[in-house]
Image 1 (cartoon, rainbow, N blue to C red):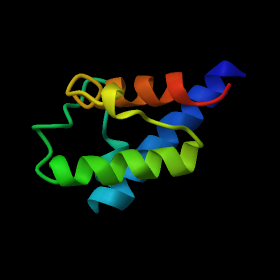
Image 2 (cartoon, rainbow, N blue to C red):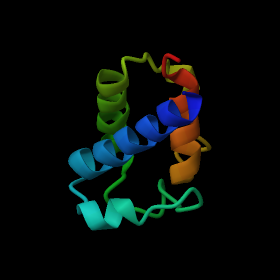
Image 3 (cartoon, one colour):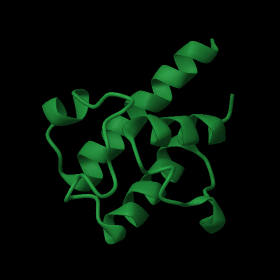
Length: 90
């Protein structure tokens, strides 16, 4: 059950990145855990981060506090998925 939830969160994160950043589905599907995000994706600038986090909150039913947002959680696709998975209800 936990594995399925984690896969669900990963699919949601992919969808949010595609929708908010205007990335192609193929590009987002190619992201691996070690794919760098913030600082490596020109589309993911500081303004886009707010949109991505808001959309994650809406789609996953979570609340992301300002003090939880840091460069580490946005460093790679895997770190963003891990963060969202930890926040998502079981």
